[in-house]
Image (cartoon, rainbow, N blue to C red; front, top):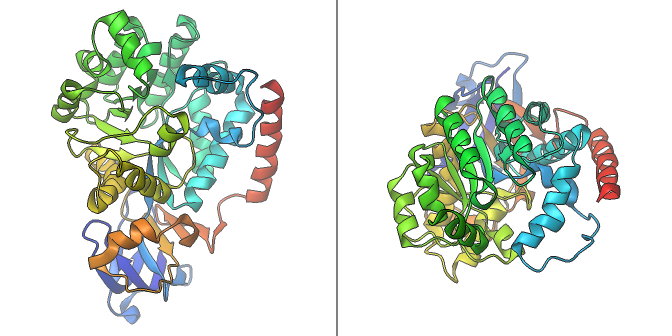
Length: 423
């Protein structure tokens, strides 16, 4: 059942050209959209949905380059029993306690909450990095079904790590390969400092065997580099390069804060993409991202802090004024780079029939020439009224259409309360 968008001001996300047009949105994975100057020339059946977009803007929907859905139930949770003093202690006392406490219902609740938040903020595709060491088997399928109930496409991975023992690492590899047999996905690794050579080799072998990529946190904190130098006599990116991680354009290197010029050169010469997560870096006080000499394969994520990609782009720009080589144009390019990543790697679910409708009344002129100024200083997720995913309307007038949101929030609160009692 096609959707007809009447009286749109369409913004081409690549050229930023503005046009007044009517759009027919065809339903299905990677289906097309059709533009009409004359509304009367559109063939409309009685089952077609017609949305009058007068006074609103339409453009391609967004995508999240790096998320952690498993953190969705952490908002407002009790303080850890011991206050962390550094990044490693933040992981030990907060996040590794949380992920080890997750069970089936908590994982499903986390995925549902994240998918809804992403959809309402205009993202119809999410690249996620999951961890639940005491409930690994079937966890990715569970998350996939939750995302699909909402109507959000995904590229998932399980965070393989030796930190809970070799048996748990083996389960992570098995879960990854089982899931990759049926779905598009990545091979997830936590970070170099929690992954020994044997597990790294197994993950790299799976990457090649399944024609996938590695999704890994890379030098997020300097501790990652210290441990790599002590244990392996080389820096993190050098180690990843030796295992072939940088050879795949499907590989994603998260953060990349504490890297030297040689590592930057390796990334630039390789095929892997870098994902920046500025607000998470600020929250953990691990440093500031700098895209200098990394090439143009830089995209943006949220790292589980929230699900609003507009906000991530603005944070990257504002915080980047202190250290990064970011400007108006590159901030938007990083915001949209995830679409290139998905396209060149033939991942499905981010076709042109994924759209957002924006209600953006502005006191100043808004056009192709000043788009970046409005994007960075005017846009917010609050302006998103409708979201179309694979040609299907999943948000209408800011209301979720696919599942009962009230029932979901009741379920998520129940699971959050269970989780907090354990913590």
